[in-house]
Length: 529
Image 1 (tube, rainbow, N blue to C red):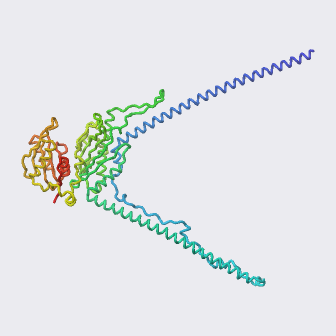
Image 2 (cartoon, rainbow, N blue to C red):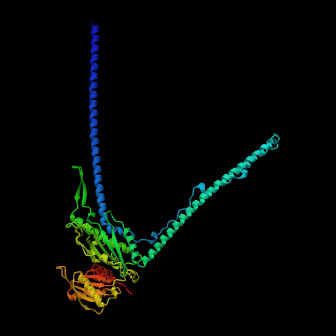
Image 3 (cartoon, rainbow, N blue to C red):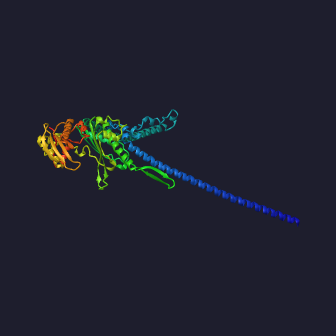
């Protein structure tokens, strides 16, 4: 009994021990699960933190990209003038020619290489004649003759096939060669015509012919690289008598200037905020763009003047915009300048302050270009009249129009007086001067801007020099006039424009006179005998 009780106690103790082991295992498993769960939770938190950091870094990079793009755009605007100083603006006439060689004559190998010509010996050599021993075999000689005949027949068959294929190859080769020769001759003809055209173009340009000078300078300005957003639209005219290039150039509007000063990432809001640029900064940058484009354009055409055909550049730049008061489209001119090549080439454009430089050159500059405050162009582009040409070009179409050079001095005086009367001035003819011109005193009756105007006319065949402009200025001072106008049938020299640029004097050349007459119902022509 005692022995049985001991066994039961042992079993009970074992059961209790196993129960304790199981409980310990259960608790250990639970602790491990809790540990794993916590580890996963920590890993998840870490991943989320890293993802958040990566996201923030990406947003900061996005912000940096925006700021870099902004800085690059501003650098492009501020560097409008500097950019052209690093390149050669001259257009090489040789670069306009076709200098490439025509492709070589290449055909497939199976067409270019002749086929292998069958040789009779190659066929016969394969047939072995009977020797001393084989001749003893009956029929060996007949077999040899039969094999020899078959070999010759095979040669003849293969030779006929060879000739057919070789003839086909030669026909194809001749056709390809003919096509190549035709294509090459057409190419050489194109090269010859193109290069001859370029040679003629260069000759016309160096002679100072208007169309060639305009075409050449069009290429110069079209090749100029500007930042995105610049229209690069312009018109050109050339006056051979005064060797004057007239440029009418479209400016970008003030929207070319970024309105954002800086981008900044705000973590708490998870957004990229914009710091606005000050309005005055926008105006200053836009003024710098207008000044830079003006100096750059003049520099480009003068640096590219390899034919030395330009003595004077007139540039007037306008902008397409909307009048905020009326909502209508407007094209105010924001800058206008006439400058001689000699004076412009004295500048060190790497060191000038653009706005001060333009004022020193006598440019008419809008005091508030961002607000579209207009200036009067030095020359109305449409007044550079293309009908102002030689006698041979005019006779065929304008025989019915009066030639101003055939008018008497008094008739010319009356014409000028009548013209300005039709333009709204109270013009009175006074007296004829000894040089065949006219002194006409007129009054602009508009309040504030009006006043007394002295008008002189010069019916000249030669270019008007500075002395005539000085005389007009002296007459203005003597008469106490607010403005002077000099009208000629020819053109003005650079010194005349230079003297008049900072004075209330307007110079109207032959083309401008024809334009004003036509605008006021008087059609005429100017022909020099």
